[in-house]
Length: 181
Figure 1 (cartoon, rainbow, N blue to C red):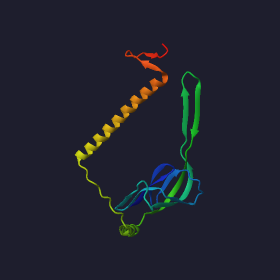
Figure 2: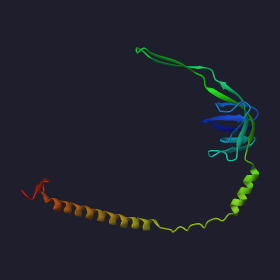
Figure 3: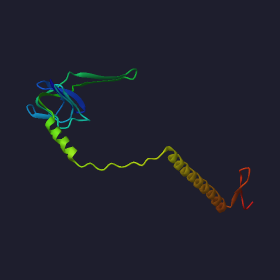
Figure 4: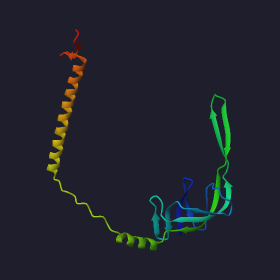
């Protein structure tokens, strides 16, 4: 049994050869051919091809049979004690498509492309330098000491320069006193 899952209009449909499916309305006339290129999964007997997100090279071909409408649904809005009542009907439009052929990517093309890919030159592998855990710890400790020392020095120099510019001094109680007092 040959079937595929196709995506059309943001929805997914199961397409089987020889059977019709109803998809959201397509702007096509009756009798025109349709091709779905967004194939998410394709099954042909025992071979299953799952796309990531789409199956490359797969497509589903069909023909438009009819433009149809679904049953009418009633949309009724109601707010109690407010005199608010709205009644509206809606009929969703669909296109009925008969599936003629499910085209799968052939295995021959894949086999030849794999051989060609193997013949292509591979870039040289990067050699990794081994670092022991002790050398990594020492290096990180040195870096952290340097960073903390420089940040403390910057903070103290900033505090001194701001107090010198304003002419204010802070006492041990934390209150600012100006030079004029």
